[in-house]
Length: 154
Image (cartoon, rainbow, N blue to C red; front, top):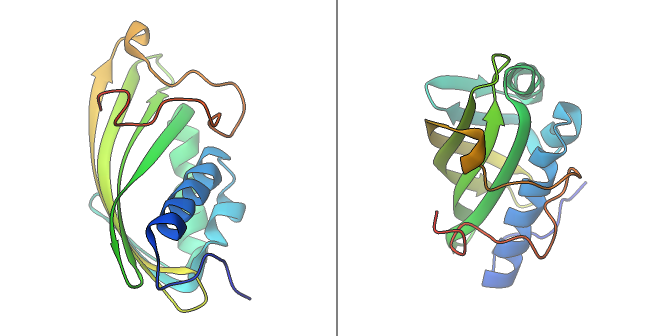
């Protein structure tokens, strides 16, 4: 099984890969998202270390139980060969109603089949008021005409 686009990446294929990842995560479907990673994929997410699809599914399941009304925007930062660097922001609220905007960077490395084999994510959370939210789409996928991070000044 392959998961195009495949490395080595061009600007266009890296941009496509980033948008595909954004759409997957915005689905909030841990089983679906995990299929984008190799069976032995290695992650560092903040200070959490994860190995393999089963741990990815467990991690994402817990994440989306805690992070309600999750909306994510990713943007290509750099790419070379089989690696892509991404910056992102996502908004969510906790079960007490406090909103957050989480900012971060990810470094990705892909296997030849286009599955991600290594993901390193650094993330910081900023409490925000509901009136400060910028991500207001209803469906799982960010609309094509919705502004990206650069256009939003993030």
